[in-house]
Image 1 (cartoon, rainbow, N blue to C red):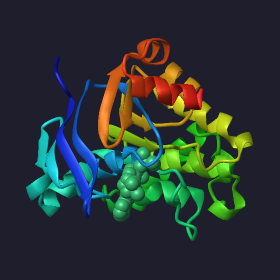
Image 2: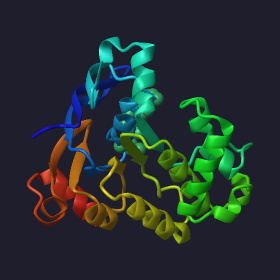
Image 3: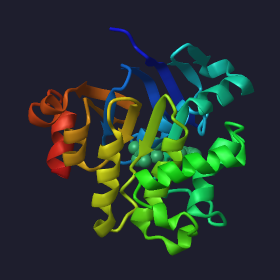
Length: 246
Ligand code: ADP
Ligand code: MG
């Protein structure tokens, strides 16, 4: 099988604590992979390691024709990884002093070096797609949690990255806003971009993912198609977890 994106031997320690332990993952182009597992298990650290928000200690990350060795990654490597990935944060992480439109433009003008005019045009298209065409001039504080996260997703969409990373995109939301955010992710998960989605929404994972990865204690315990992981898990730890959350 050809891996478009390959993670191999990825290891991350915080002091004595090995939070990621030799993670191996191969993603096919356009694949949607859901990551589930107990809290404190390294799911966020895995996503953050992939673009060096947390610098991994060991292992290799390959994104298309770019391969980065964690132990000797240069600034150029890290910048290149960041150019090819887009991150949707649990707490939206919007700039409070920028409007919705400016938040979407930001990465395009700074990381991509686009002109403000071109970035504004793209941002307007994105605002349309995330259903916020009339809220482009609003600051985050004037938006609902659901709208803020839709802007967070729009900002990531604008980058057209090879790999989209979602870290529990609905877990900070009031229940009333969860549906609209999941609907937006469903709408954009059309198989064109590869997606790694950490989620505690099991039904959503089952429906959206081509593959589900169960992590515990910094390791991948089990992975497979959603029907297998949710319907017929092989490992006791996966079963115990699914009983607890189901
Ligand atoms: P999950 O997303 O699965 O809940 P995390 O990746 O956030 O888990 O955390 C995994 C482990 O790493 C936890 O034990 C957490 O306390 C630890 N950890 C995460 N970030 C840091 C950090 N910046 N410094 C020290 N320990 C951390
Ligand atoms: Mg987390």
